[in-house]
Image (cartoon, rainbow, N blue to C red):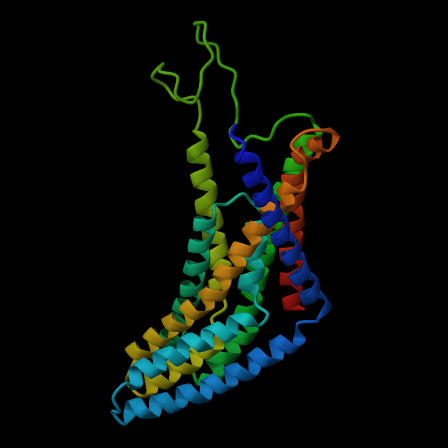
Length: 320
């Protein structure tokens, strides 16, 4: 190994540990209520953005040039400030990124898709609620705030419990002295002297490969995460979509809802990056050798268990 490798590794560890410190600080501030001022600021900005949206819609109805671009910009800003406040999406994405070994690119894609899916739920709810069920604005908003909010929180709590279960199972396997594998290893008698790998050339399969198992888990986790976040649409998107429906410019409302989703995703992507950063910081705390190095076997399971419990508790708190 070159002489420059050790300084680089040391700098990486310092940055990773710093990320863990920032993440822990934000968690403490959020849980203690110290971020209430930021939440109040975000709520005020959302109300102002709704007023601006209504003004942009009046300009659109009057045929003023640039009204559509102005509306989309306001929608993006609304999604941005909406995401600054407390939200189930950030808790789920952040907890999942910290508790599991997921690549940053994949987690970023999940954050983006979940925000756009949330906007898509608002579109489907307004279109179906008005066109098919003839529901009023109050009924749609009540449905979102009452029933769908609880459904979303319960789905997120189930994701947290599932992550906690996987973490506890990993800890149990570590305690039993075995290495954690996602593959099920089978002993086969084939009448020939060699050990079989997943693809040993003997023309038959011995179980799914590690890549296949990870792909299955990734797909299942992705569906659970996106569904949990998308189950509760943004009330600001409902406000815009209902107004544009009445003005017969629903397609512009759909574009505005997606712009809100992109604004929300901007903050969620930051949370995703910080969660991966904090995870690396946690893993970097332990030395590569020495008595404490053995604790590294326990740390992934403990992190996943803790993240899952945090997600579940936060989601249940939203219901209560």
